[in-house]
Length: 314
Image 1 (cartoon, rainbow, N blue to C red):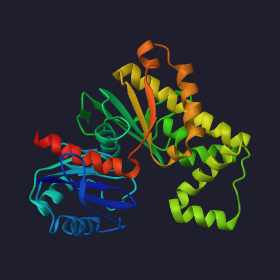
Image 2 (image 1 turned 135 degrees about the vertical axis):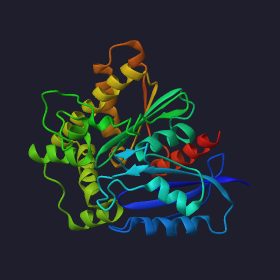
Image 3 (image 1 turned 90 degrees about the horizontal axis):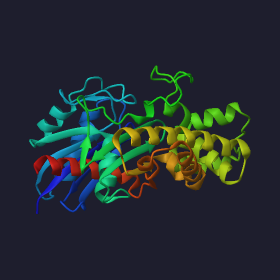
Image 4 (image 1 turned 45 degrees about the vertical axis):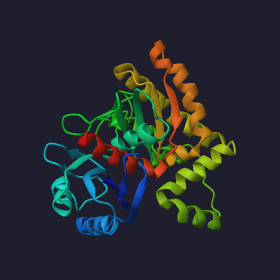
């Protein structure tokens, strides 16, 4: 039996798995992302996963960006110890195998296309809505990576040219309206008061981390019908709808899969998203876009990295 080694690198977690051609994980492992000396931790994880397992024939890596495919380097925003880090070459040194690199959100899209909610779609946009907003395109079964590997940064598409400045320096970016922290920021500025029960706060923090506690509480408030919380999700959903309609008009995607922590809000996000998309979309092929919630969740990027490696060998 042959397999590929899939690696998913984020600011909080490193994950790796040996994956066969059907997408089954034969061995896997995770560990926290250290603040420094990340490569040492990654090398140890690779040894743990590959030791004693079936031989891998290639490596696929999904990593937070930005990145540069020409040089194989990465500079993840939330990993300050890696700036222009030669990740592809370093992993190749550790494994001795052909190694391919892509963004983590691009791998999310490819994973959902291969095994998840976008399976069978000819053209797919995958969106990760979390602390930030990332994305990836899969057209004809192949990921669209772009010249430098940064295609799919849909969170920084402008849906309001007169809007507020985004942290990226642009104006009116989707992320400024629809990411978890920005949903909460707007809700707080407009009078929302989050739950203050210490047990509830501690329980949520134990499951999702401080950043996602606020988004989870906002979603719970929206489910309970709190007007400002509901309005925050409707505002964010309208921004996402504008981005989806624009992307569909430019690339003619037929399926959109939404994942990330904020997608866990469920109906309070997806129902206003469907309504807003119906309102902003005009052309028939744009109105035909199907929006689905991720079915792979946190496994999507790892699945996409594996598929990327298999495609390299094809």
